[in-house]
Image (cartoon, rainbow, N blue to C red; front, side, top):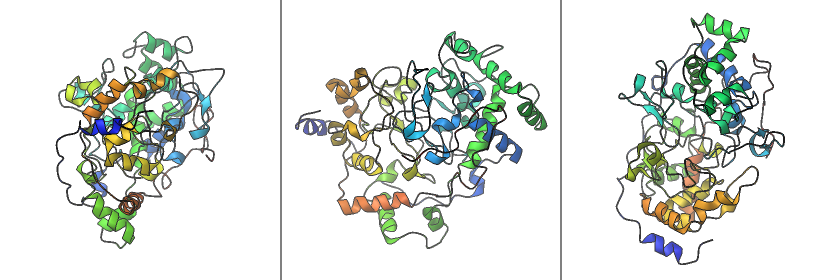
Amino acid sequence: MFNRTLGALFVSLLSGTAAMAGPLPAPVNDDDFHTFPAELIELGRDLFFDPILSGNKNIACATCHHPSLGTSDAMSLALGEGGIGLGRARHVDPANVPHERVPRNAPALFNLGAKEFTVMLHDGRTAKDRHAMFGIAMPDGRTLERPMPSPLAAQNILPILSPAEMAGNPGENEVADAVAAQRLMGPNGAWDILARRVDAISEYRQRFAALGTVGLHINDIGTALSAFIGSEFRATYSPFDQYLRGEDAMTEAQLDGMDLFYGKARCSTCHSGSFQTDHNFHAIGMPQFGPGKSEYADKGRGIVTGVPDDMYRFRTPTLRNVTQSGPYGHNGPYSDLEDIVVHHLDAVKGLASYDREKALLSGDLKVMDWEALDDFDEVMRIAEAIEIVDVTLDQAEIDKIMAFLGALTDEGAGKRGLGVPNSVPSGLAIDAVAPPS
């Protein structure tokens, strides 16, 4: 823990001002979203819940992005390969202890089918980019082999290559062996192995063929997943959406919170637009713990670009259905939504006084996992990078902000569509719903 003078030392590091908040966004409509054939959406649904895409056939996309958990996993740091169960009940499998853990929070999937979502992941390493192969930037060594319809479709074929997320470890399966050998693309690469595995299941092969697919490729799988995610998790029927359409749908407290959000509280400086995100990257001084990405302190966008000013910047998340998708932050340091709202009011103070009990973690963290938080010099560097300015709100105003965030929740999102299948074509077991926490 830090001493009482540390917060005061950090305050002197902040400088600069942010742009003024903008007006209310226009109502969202169907034209703002990509559309897909019903058969492709249903095919993507089955693949989303099917463990067939993981190296050891023991984890599905839905494991860390389950509709019963706000399309996330309810944990600060996801536990992928080597875990058993869903949500807060997920724990390490003693017979398959993971060699490494996922270093970041599993982001929610709401509204990713909207056309404006062209930047994916916390650090934006997958994004629309006209200079990149087929117009979509991908991480090093994972260049697309064929055109993809969207960055979401391209992003979908990345977790299946991650040992900590879905691939597993060398010696456990042929996908993991290919990944360890950096044999990812081309014939007998990890992507090809998985595509052939899916194609070997007659029901999948027939359904893809009915859609005109000849020679199943990993891109076809990523595209089917994007059709399901983009359709199933549309969240545009919240009280705020109804209000923007001219309906009397918000309470007085929610309206007061909206005025603060788009005014004095300056939330919309970054959380702007139809989905309360500017799709940009900002350093807000998130307390850091866990294994980190590339090194123990996660430098976010800076890892991707190598630009000093991008260090510790992370993508602005959408706030749609934010009440359902905690914990919050790129590594989930805050399990309570109000706590991260308060952090934004004085980010330096939030960083300096962070209580690690606010995180929700599965299994035991090692001593080294707290290294970034316990390293005074590293914390100072995180503080120096903070670019949001302080805002003074009293508790009554914070309560109104919280009320407005509740008005961004579409309670029917993920419930109006296809839902969880009773079974999947591979015949592997699926988890239908997370147990009560």
